Structure formats: structure tokens, C-alpha cells
Length: 205
Image (tube, rainbow, N blue to C red; front, side, top):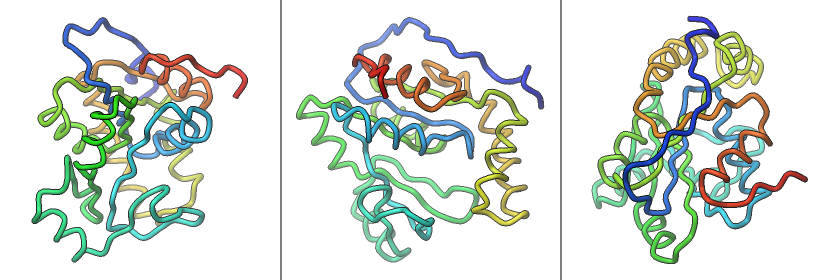
């Protein structure tokens, strides 16, 4: 796979209504978390959903801010009660989920809602909320995606290989989305995303 296999950014006209929810997904290590964090820090009009996860916090991550960190038993209990809008087992190891009640409350209040989730979760949200807007975050090239994954140093070599194999499948799912944004620079990608959400980008950020 090379850069020529990757999608160019595009904004296609919507043919269905939009309910105020925007879903951001893309391959592993593409920078979804970095873009969503930039939006949280610079665009207070965006309500950013916080996912629950069974994985351990990475350095600097705060419970309730970056994720709701749950034990396997706690996650199982939420799942049994139908409390997730979507959930997924990612890379065969950890589970992630979006709490249904928090998203529904934000939509009812008329907020601009952003869900930053993995591909499996995005597909579930499409079933549950077909009027949401779906945005695929793509890397500038395959080599850059590999560089980002290896460079962050948070996974073992075996885990990196597993994630890159997953990324090849994730990149092929781009056609399922309404829009593609290339994450070549975080501030620019964030501005493009908030514009899609109907907000004015902050070019001074």
C-alpha cells in the first residue's frame, strides 16, 4: 500500500438530513485523538463525547476527560443494561464504547456533537443514528501512518504489526463515509472538520 492508495480529501453533498451528530473515525495512529483534543481545547461550541474503555490509561490521560476507564466487570455491567450507543473490541484486546445517555442528552439540547470512535463503532452508530454525519480521517500517506504509530512508542513491536495490519483494512472502509479529511496538519484538519459541522473555524489557533 502506498500514498497513491489513500483517499484525497473530499466533501460530497449530503442527500439526507443531519441530526447534529458528527462521527470521526479512521485507521489506527492517524491522529483521531489529537484532532479531537485540539477541537476540545479550541472550539468550545463542540460537545466532544468521552468514550468508555477497558484499556489502561496512557501517560497524561485523565479519567473522565480523555476516556472513562472501566474494568472489564464494569464494562460488562454497562453492556448488560444496554447503556452503549456503540461498542467494539479493538485489536482483539480492549473494548471501547459510547454511552448512549450522554449523546442523546447533548442532541436534545441542540449541541454540535462529535464522536471520535473506531471503525467498528462508526458502523454501529450508522445503524443507530443514520442521520449522523460520518467523517473519515486519513493519513497523508501510508509511510506517514507507519511513522506515527512507531514514533509514539506506546505499543510493542508485535502490537505495532497487529495495528498496521488492521489499518490496511480500515483504510479500505473510507468509501463508507460521507467525507474524508486528510490529517496532514492538526489545526488545519480540525478547522476543516468544524466547518463541516457548521461552525466557523478559528484560524488563529
